[in-house]
Image (cartoon, rainbow, N blue to C red):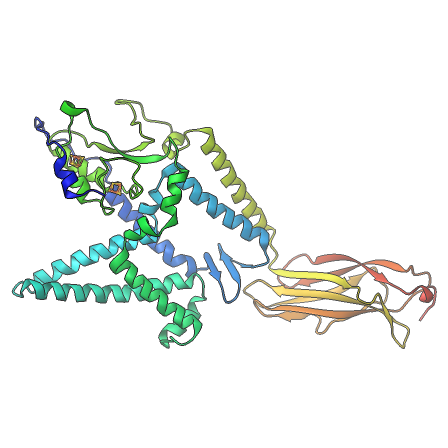
Length: 453
Ligand code: SF4
Ligand code: SF4
C-alpha cells in the first residue's frame, strides 16, 4: 500500500512541455461504469427470472429457465463445472478483470463511495451556512439512510438466489424476523449494510478467496496493469501521484504490477493519460499481456491474441470450456420434464389371488419437474389380460409434485405361459410426445403354468 512518505521519496522529474495530445481513445472508467450497469441488471434479473438460483427450501437448482431437481446430477454437474472453469479461465487469461468490471462487491463498494461523496456535496450546497461539523453529521445521516434502504434491496436480491422471491417478499412485507427465513434476511441485510458502509474494497484484499486464487493462477501471459517508464534521466513520470489518488485499492501501481490488491480496473491508466497528455506525452500505465508491453509501432494483433489466446494452454482451456458447455446443452436437451422411475418389487416374487390371478408388485416414482400440471397415463404391452391397480390412471401431478408408490400388476395365467414373461410398461406424460418405456419381467408360479383361469 502506498504511503505519503513513499510518494514524496520518489525523485521529481522536470519535463520539457510539448504541445498537448488529444485525449486517449479508451476511457476505462467509462467502459467500466457501463459494464457495471449491465452487471447490476443481470445480478437483479438472474433470480427473478429463474436464470440462476439455488432454491434451498425446495432443493431445486434453477438454470436458464429450467427447474432442475437436486437428483439431476448430469445437468448440475455440467453447469457447475462450466461456471467454475469460466471463472478459472477468466483469472488465468484476464487476471482480476472480473473483480473490477463485474463483481457485485466492487460495483456496490464504488457506488457506496460515490453516494458518500454525493451526500457531502449535496449538504454543503443546500445548507452552506451550517457549521462544518453539523454539515458532516447531516451528510453522514443522509448517507446511512440511503445505504439502509439500498441494503434492504440488495439483501433481498441476494437472498432471492436461495429462496423463492415471492415468499421472500411476503416475509419482508410482514417484517418477519422470527422464522429462520426472516432471521436470515435480517442478518443478510445487516451484513450488507456493514459491508458497504465500513468494509467496501477491504473485502477484496482480506476476505475474498478469489484474489488469493488469482496469485496462483496467473502466468507470464496473464493480463496485467503495468507501469512502463524510462531509466533515471529518461523518466517521464512527473510524480503528480494522480494514479495513486484515483486507486480505490490504495496502492501505487508504479511499485509493481503484481500487487495482490490490484484489481486491474484501469483507473490509474485513465489518470496517467489525462495528466501526461496535457504535457504532450502518452500515459505510462497500460494493460499488457504479461509484463512486456507491445513494441512501439507494432501492427494491430489478430483478434484471438487480443482476446487472450496467447498459448496452447489457453486454447486447451477454451476446449474444456466448450466441452462443458456442449455437455450442458446436450443434458438440457435430453431432459424430460416429467420423471418416471419404475422397478419391480421383488420382496415377494408373486402372490396368487383367490380368483387365480397372479400378482407381481411394481415400485414407481412420478415427479413433475415442470411448472405446469400434468397427467401420466400407464399401460402394459405384451402381457395378455394384465390389470394395473394404480389409481387414478391417468395420475394427475401438480407442478413440483412427486409420488412414490408400490402397486399391483394382476395377470390371469394363460396356457403355455413361461415362468418369466417379458413385457413393457409404458408411461405417457400429457406434456410429452413419446411415452417412457420400461422393459420388465412378470413372474408366474411354476404350478400355474398351463392352467387357464
Ligand atoms: S493500481 Fe490501477 S489498476 Fe490496480 S487497482 Fe489501483 S487503479 Fe486499479
Ligand atoms: S499519473 Fe502518471 S505521471 Fe502521475 S505519478 Fe502516476 S505514473 Fe507518474
